[in-house]
Image (cartoon, rainbow, N blue to C red; front, top):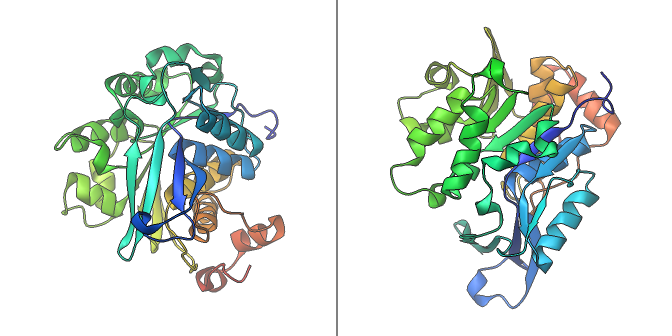
Length: 326
């Protein structure tokens, strides 16, 4: 099937306006804030579009300047935004970054946002019904009871009764969850997805430090047909049925880690949808994550097509040497 004939990947979730000090400095003393956009699922859609995979982002935005800016920027990236709704009664979500010597803190202003009012009724939208694959993250069920119901409605039917496969990135954001609730909810959703992404450190924080490696996470999550366990900047392991493949991460200069997990998921999904084998799909995930790691925003440019092809075909030594010489 050609890329143009393939049904789109539909990514469902909230995207917010992001206010970021420029230049990067503690918020309290900053005089200038730049406006960017931030959303896990739209990040995935944008990187899928970069890889030539038809991608659609479905969400809700306020009828306000931030909402119009977000819709325009995502659309300009080649993503179909026809399924994005405008809510005249609720605002677009907002976050503010506060860089500091120990990392960047994020302050969220998203309670009562337009996206938090999404419900299972969204499943009747043509943008969802015509998807070839649906991608979700663990951020969405934390936003509201109705958002939790939406994710449950997509994941609770058995895999063979779903209209299309569902990809789920655990993407645990502790600040969004009432204490003691995230582990059980996210475990249930992660077990029921067709494709699940989770970080090893994330799994340990949620479900116990006894999860020493990717194999232990697979024992906990036997349900997904494909499970991808990311071990930070070291490696990623994919369990595809009975097959197991681990690909080390190439060396890359890190400017900011925000968005790298979304980029990895998009790269891996792009490889899967293009019919690449598991090792090449994992490599494509790493290369896409590298694009995010090199920039201060969530989205960075991919290596050019020839360089990308060369890196996918590289021998083990060349691969391990890294990608910063692109």
